[in-house]
Image (cartoon, rainbow over the protein chains, first blue to last red):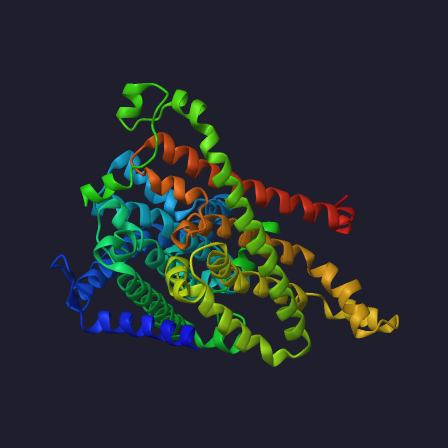
Length: 252
Length: 235
């Protein structure tokens, strides 16, 4: 009983720290407003990495899918990406390029590219060939086919990839303090200034941020799904459907 | 920040080419002498990954069989495991600390939680993709539901089940590099101990990547061995 109470007490203290903030014995202000600043840095880093990753991987994935080339590249980039631990990736960048916002952003971009690239590619290749032929028969140019037919039909999967990447980047941005950027991982990595309560508080905020992003992008994913696809498969694309469709494409 | 980074440089850097080591360089001579120190973290890393994937597989398998009979369970199970999959493991380590303390248990709970969705989805998808005609043929031969599941549906779902295991194994190797935050050691602890030293980062990071590739290949090999009929078809 006392164990459970102590446990709830620790969470209570952590929640209080998030909203109220306090001054440590060393005289530093932690929690409260300072957590809002850490959160903003976390979000800023995530947005920067995701924007660059999307700008790179969506066009490449769409193009590769449209010309039906490079399936090996588009699929295996995901497999390789999964095998490289995010901590190792950040560590490589720190050891070889040094610390700083640009370097961390680049590392996170590398982390975010594979799911978006693979899903964009798979999304386009899954578009019915007859649909593309019909568009061509209507006199659409190749660019129009990609923009008006293949892109809208691939959007649900592309957003699935963006969702996977965004949650992954938020998780990894937690170790960005190793590279000198003070995100919400600061209380976790540099625990001495915050104590156990600060660590727990940071973990709560990071978890909430990830779940919030997941829900937000899930809503966006449903919003961009064309009505026809929604009717076709109500259950299939409800969750981030990354693993299964990819492997099936890879094996055929 | 600089001083905090300096604090964690606790690793012993004796032996090897002194100037290379002092420059935080990539020093083969240092690696050759100091490779021993990576053996125990590597074994711990293998332990965490294998145990987490094994428990994750057992749980997901049970859940998938349950959902196979009671279809309405697929939605709720996907949602719950989806939340576990979304929660960053580094956050879960610290959320669990007040409950389970530091050590392997905390790390394993987080790693298992993460793997559930991946494996569950693939088993469910594999079972769903068994052609209706095949199942009908099995029923026509007089198989019971139980026999149909174990002799027809599960064998045919094996490629997708094994694909799920491969994804779970490689991602778990990656996440286990963060397990030292939960006090469970592993290769991540070595990376973290001296993150500015190229030799250290390359060896510890490289071992993690190699482990992921090795496990991926091993599972593929097992799949090849237990699904001989997929080869007979193509020959």
